[in-house]
Amino acid sequence: MSDANEKITEFILQYNKNKKCLILVDGNNFYHSIKRLGIKLNFEESVKLHAQILNLLCKATLKSEIKYYTANPNMKLEPEEYSKKQKFLAALKQKIPNLIISLGRLAYFETKEIILKKTTEINVANFDGNKNQILEFCKTCIGKTIKKEKKSDVNICIDLIECAMSKNTDLCYIFSGDADIVPAIKMVKKHWPNILLINVAVDKSSAFELRQTCHNYIILHEQNLLALSK
Image (cartoon, rainbow, N blue to C red):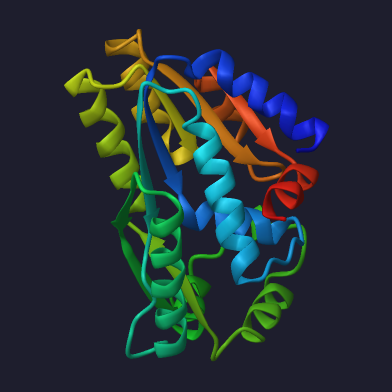
């Protein structure tokens, strides 16, 4: 284990000992955060990275539960991607026995539809450039389809609050860089102050507000991720 990951392990152990732990993982956010760093992993490395990190977060706990939030590609639109996703999730469950998969929905949008809808809404005052130049630039995207995951943020918030209400958790790791879940975290801190909330996120993909709202945080840098994937 690298020196950097030894420090993370020490950090985790000081919080985990004899704790009932819940780990909430925004899988889509994690995937895109790794991609944003320019890290390229093959299938086996990606599975190993997930397993190493999530099993590490469970270390020395009294009991632990991991919820992994993601969405399946549309089986008809993307049969190959759907098959890859099923293989990946099956491999994760094999490596992480206490993993629970929580599925949201993957929505598909045609960029042409989005651009036409938004064209009349553009406020030139919000841009440094010329409106027509912006629209010409956007038109280069016409014909492409973009995907957006739905429900995962909401599901994370619901599970966090429900778990706090059940009083079955002493410690919660929130593995995400998305500030959309901050209101739920604030609610838990207010009504269940004994639950320790720790944010886990990838470097350059962590919202400042999210880090500051949690009691503490762990930032995974490129060297951490590469070492854990090997």
